[in-house]
Length: 232
Length: 363
Image (cartoon, rainbow over all chains, first blue to last red):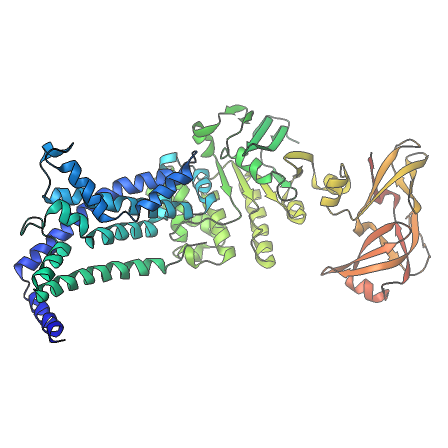
């Protein structure tokens, strides 16, 4: 019990004193996961919207695949990104394995299906006649898509946060493709794993608290959005 | 009426949805400034026809002309779509204020901010929702939301407005108020309107012409009185509120009047058919008068029958009285009259109606 109390006390002192190493790790985590989320937004939202709006044969299978992708195990992503970026791999010449870029790539692959799946559901959930109503108001196809996305902006915001929440808390891929190099590719989750392994519970708890706070903030905003209602 | 080029016309229209034919209309002309109602049961194709007219549903076959010029199918119809507007049964408002909702169509046309500021308040006032301007669409009542939806459509000053059951989700007082306002605004603006509804009273109140639809086709089109009083067939008759529909045969033909033999009695009607012709007699319930005695003080009613009251069903302001006179006859009687005549089920009573009240359909 002492261990935990001591850990928590030390953790708060680390947080309050803005320990440079903890701060660095936190910033890198935010930067890497932020970049990955941004990439996933472009890929996920555009494809998600297109799949939602266009009817084509095999649409159900595509939607099932996207939904499956929402639960992609990070270690599997880490494995394949490692293989592709390996020195002898197809993209080995880029020499980006064990760099923050590699983590961004792996995390973007994890976040994209999440953003895509939520975008798809959000657009499909809009009233069916809304599309016709927007066209009837004199919109071009592009204006119509833009207005639909604006209408779905709250669930789309949820997609952003779900994507971000998914990658900031993931550890498997980050450790495999980033390597947890101190001051270079060490992020919150990989650092927590390592510090726990070393028995440095105070630092591990401090990192854990930061992660929890981030997760809480994301969920608080998500809940706020979910509680809002659609207009008639 | 107007003999110039119709504002909108379709020819040889055929539409399929999911491999099933939903519309088959050889020709339909819509006249400038008129209000045309499409009535018919669910699935008759009213909504589909509106969507095709508004260029929102691709047509497999057929041509659409706007003021005589062909409107191409698909995306190139944008210029045409910008001259029309459509209001659906659901208000389908955007997640924004009433003001921004009404401005939506104007913004899509890249109108200047100054113009939008001029048009939107005027439009809100017209629909009596000026005080709601800054309110969020989410916080509107059903009637307010539908007013906003109509204001949004009228803001773009459409030449034709398509209305798909715009009142059917509203409660009766709200609906009445909105129908009155819409009627006034249509008159003031001179906008041509095509409205789908399954409520014949709505159609009669608002329209210059009514088209009765069934299974993707137009069964009958004409002035509301013509549709009400001279339905073309039994389907139209029952749909426009004819309660008594009797099959019979002409047994005597005279100068302008005929006697129709129906099972259980002979009915005198106005018509120019020959003896032996098979016909259907349509008698509207409001044309049938009931009395307790057989006295026919100066009534020109040629048809008098004694019958037994089978059922009295209250319908609000009046009661629907079903009689067995050998054939079944239905009459509408006001509630005070039911009390004055002390009508009861099982009682014998006299029913009369004029020969002109009988509409004959040749079989």
